[in-house]
Image (cartoon, rainbow, N blue to C red):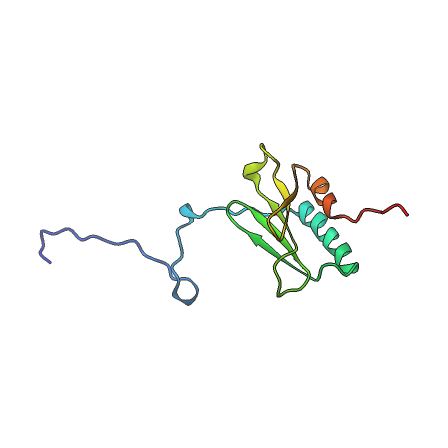
Amino acid sequence: MSDAEPIQFSPRVQAGFAGTVAQPSSTHQSATYFNRQELREILALYGRKVAAGEWRDYAIDFGRERAVFSAFRRASEVPLYRIEKCPKLARRQGAYSVVTATGLILKRGNELSRVLGVLEKRLAAV
């Protein structure tokens, strides 16, 4: 390196856990989440289904485009139902949807309580 060449500094990279590289905060994408009221409604339904012996486990996934609550009969299986929140679809079909294990969309809408109503047990006339 001669005196005429400029010195170039590379940006400092911060190391995170186990040597992974942390991304700068300007490129951080925000995720989609369920708010407190939405979680309260979903977990109330989950509690009723657990008490009835229909569901035994759940998982919550937060992604950039959607938040998903998955309900399982057993932890080792595929989810019976997925309750999804996709704000991008709010003006079209509705932000909330209930999807079966096969991918069939049971109900869509903008009100979570109405969408969750499809999973409630209906009383049968005798």
